Length: 107
Image (cartoon, rainbow, N blue to C red; front, side, top):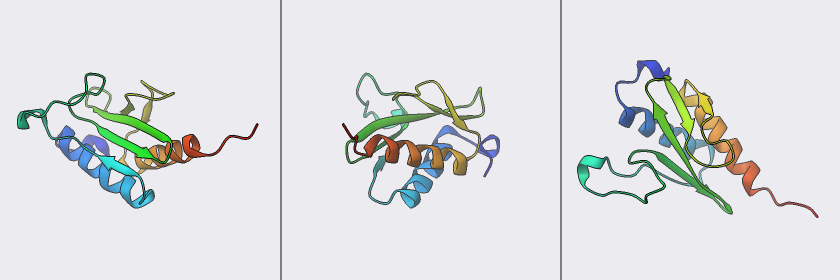
């Protein structure tokens, strides 16, 4: 589904959540409750985002930016960069980032 066809930030992040879980089944992936539910997150995390961790990687936060019509990294080494304008492209970017950040380093 193209991101510009999504009706809301919640839809976009929920679809991304499902796609990342399919690509990285062992990753801890969550989308915090919508702010209307009265459960604020940590100060460094936006009110509505996808949070992903895997092994030693993360947490990485991804937000939906309706102005750009795509997903953006909110944290991590690529903070502010666009992940793509489709759920599939963004999910692959998140999966690759988790894998890369979790890869052991050699001395």
